[in-house]
Length: 215
Image (spheres, one colour):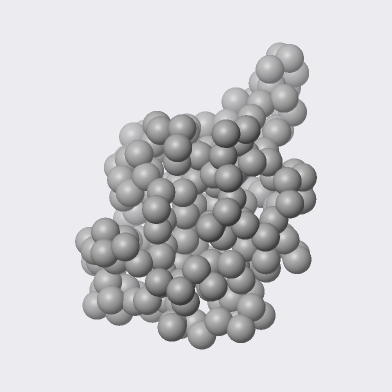
């Protein structure tokens, strides 16, 4: 089983590759549409603006291959911007369509918390990951993670899923509950960076590898 990390010019591919290799995975980086469509498992990494990310996918002819892969039931993991591009659209610097694989929109984090206190945006730092009260991490890449363990985030925009069943994890940002992860069947999105989240992040990537191997 080979994991393909999608190359569309958005940065952090090598750090993601190294993290997966630490987990014993066989990986490749590719922007070949045929390889992407037919890969055993896909990782869509990303940093930067939503519009630029989608333009990068489009310029490389990768939008339809990603959808073909996902709709075939094979594992897909979106990381940070890659997670946001799973949504229907983003409101970052305008309104731009996404992949539409997990229904939702991407909107700007508020610079005011629930108490009306100003906070810095983008949010950069560590936060405790939580499981929704009616949710479960069993059978997902988070199944080895304990509630309250720390993850590393860098973002100004966040995913607002339309269906509660797609919410996998949250974190508390100065009183506001923010989506940390979403999941729909074979598709998982992580707002945080597992490749920068130390042992917790590696646990998540190992579980993604295990799940991919078992499909």
